[in-house]
Length: 220
Image 1 (cartoon, rainbow, N blue to C red):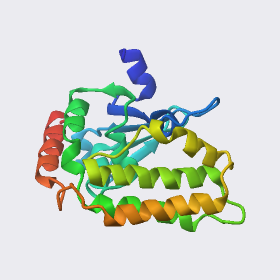
Image 2 (tube, helix red, strand yellow):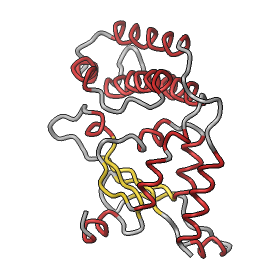
Image 3 (cartoon, rainbow, N blue to C red):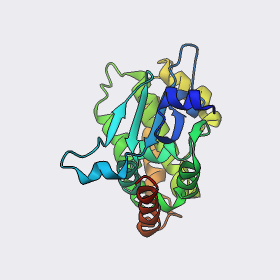
Image 4 (tube, helix red, strand yellow):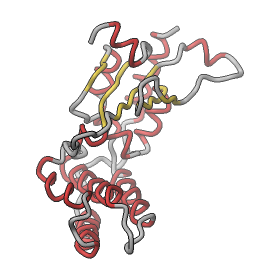
């Protein structure tokens, strides 16, 4: 990526990826391009009483970025949205620090993800009205369960949904009855609960902290 394009996305970014439907392989005509990034605030800014922002929106539409420390905290807590950024197949910006962060992605995953992916999907379910479902939300509920199940089985979330694309898009279009969608949800929840996890009990926080300290030293 050229420096001009870097500036368009944010010249303090160490990593920027495309997420959402385009990363999942679920995009259709007119789909937005969702971007998620990690930026680094100058280390000296943390010496002030007013601390740097932990996140920001823009400058492009549908772009959201976290300051690197906040990103690491959320990833260590197995936040599904954050973890999936580390496995996006669509990377637009990656500096040497960004490459190092991607190389550390397995240090963030742990059995906490077994709970968080299920909980996030359940939160989606509780906000759905079976009498008038929001079908896009229902699709993402199922997608989260599929991603989480792959994570506990194989050690990484499933981002590309190519094998489920037709079925998921049929859900999004409202072409499947709610009872069928709910049965799929129940089945995936049962699989997720019964699947032995290949993930470590805890993330490798020490390795992540070493990375973060190197970033801070590098931005003095």
